[in-house]
Amino acid sequence: MTDSPVTPFTQQLQGVRVLDLSRVLAGPHCTALLADLGADVIKFEVPVHGDDSRHLGPFREGESVYFGLINRGKRSVEIDFKSESDRARFYELVADADVVVENFRPGVTQRLGIDFDTLKQYNPRLIYASISGFGQDGPFSRRPAYDIVAQALSGLMSVTGFPETGPTRSGEAIGDLCAGVYAAWAISSALFARERHAPGAQYIDVAMFDVLFSLQMTGLSNLFATGVAPGLVGNRHPVSTPFDTYRAADGLVVIAVASNRLFQRLCECMGNAGLASDPRFVDDDQRTRNEPALRGEIEGWTASYKVEQLCDALLDAGVPASPVWNLAQAAASEQAQVRQLQIYPEGSGLPLVPQPVFFNGQKPHATTLAPRLGADNQAFGLADPIKRKQEIKHEL
Image (cartoon, rainbow, N blue to C red; front, side, top):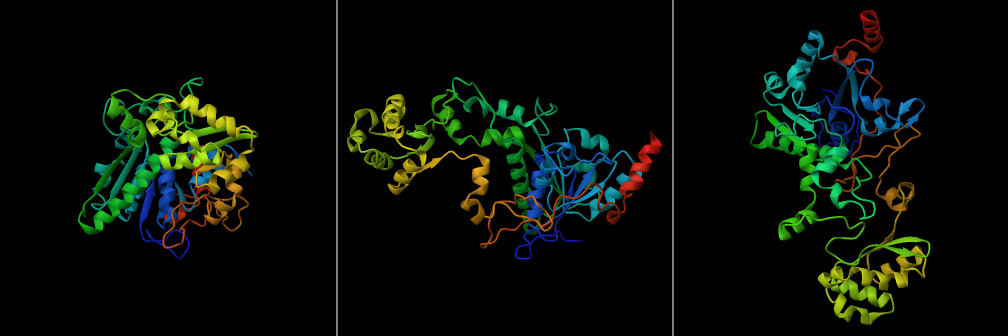
């Protein structure tokens, strides 16, 4: 077995082979995290066309930057699961693998002969993870699901946005991404269990809908406490106040207060210490009930100062505060550099964004770029890319 190319100081998943049948985002994000930790990830792609995300912009020098970010550190082979010879070769690879990851719509793997029940016959210790929109059962299981659909049905969109905007999706495809993270967590847990007390094959079922629902702790606590579904509050926290963006002279400043002690500090910073004893603002519940009046008091102060001035004063007083950065500002920050949020593989002018966790002070990450389509065909006993193209042209 060949180890994937990762930095030598951490090899948490060294020796683990992952067969990645997934495409676009949720599955590839999962397997990229595993590759960062040293797993040997072999990406199986449709011949000639490859993963659909290879064709999603933006592009640099003819290559998808999007595809490159989420397929770092992997190897690529082309395979046609409708071909008996390709499928037979895949079964041979399954026998020597540890993990299979797929995100087909439920039912597709059975039709192709690559489902869990089939593959565990070739490897009784196999860990098989399926990632889908709604899981493998339930009335929605066969529905197509993009991230926005999962956000809409999970309730997340109903609490995201302002009353004047209506429900909005998150600015990122967090349903896909969080499902990928949970799948990687589940796979790692299954690998641990296999070594300790569960030697048999294990099946993992991850649904974007389930993941997004389970992440809404604040909204769910309100729902369970009152029986009323929470609604849109914009940037404001639904329980703690003041906890929002506030108008400054040159933009917006975030102020996050979640205790009476911090509110006292904020009032002192505003030069209005007596505000903390105002009956309307004496505790979190009253401050939330009287949020419009409190906003007026706060913005009467913040509007006279620039964001940087406000942050300096508030942070000096121990009150959590920040500007609202765009992504370029976050990426260029010293904090991002110190935390190694971007790495530059040798020979690449573009960065990769590895998994974000440090182990013993070190951050494991893949050091190679995403593979070109079919780059590893011959290494795994499959037709080389040129021959694949010739075969398909001949068929046409």
